[in-house]
Amino acid sequence: MTTAKAAAIILAKELRLEFRTRELLTATVIFALVVVVLFSFAFDPTAAESRRYGPGLLWIAILFAGSLMLNPSFAREQNNETLDALRMAPISSFAILLGKILANFIFMSLAELVLVPVFAVLYNLSLAGIVWRLILVLVLGTLGLTVTGTVFSAVSAHARMRELLLPLLLLPLLTPLLIAAVESTASLFAESPALDRTWFAFLAGFDIVFLTASWLLCDHLLAE
Image 1 (spheres, rainbow, N blue to C red):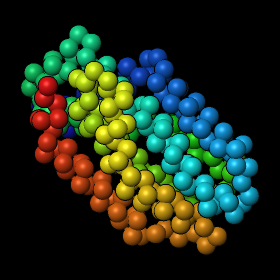
Image 2 (cartoon, rainbow, N blue to C red; image 1 turned 90 degrees about the vertical axis):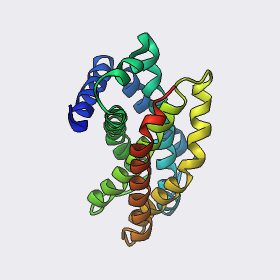
Image 3 (cartoon, one colour; image 1 turned 180 degrees about the vertical axis):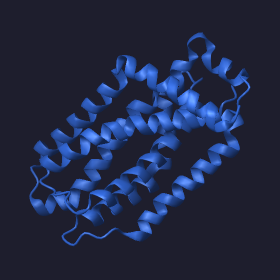
Image 4 (cartoon, rainbow, N blue to C red; image 1 turned 45 degrees about the vertical axis):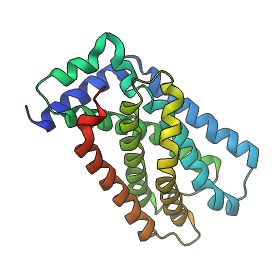
């Protein structure tokens, strides 16, 4: 079985499991919305302050939502030793990891589909004229978050305190990605919107590096 076909089967399994109950997706969306709403009441920003602080607050909400969503990626495979069964199947380890990454990317994208319009309304920021460029930034930032989050979810899956271990491993590594995502988003919300190509290229490079690393190290990442 090819890697692409195996990854598609893993992705379909993940989507069926989540959309059957929608517990994790619903909790993530509500959590992210609460963070954004609380920030808006705490700061009560003006238009200029929204352009200045809004991108950082948006990515903080996305980071918190991602931390909540990514943690169970491999934890739920511990039941009935499902992960061991997947590793014994005639598929590559990267197919398992890729299927998980794609599923988490879709879930995060759905959460952002609700979060970003609400954020724009609360902070009085117009998305007119920057929608497609903002989508590109969100896609690259979310992909970097889901790749690293899924990888470290696999690493911490067998740990006793994995709920605490995952943020400790993930947050320092994501700092450069978050800085690039915030700067790219801020350049779009400026009075004269223009995508900062340097930070945008950094986002793309981050994704390529960690996708390549996950492919090269997938056998070790999924080992006990």
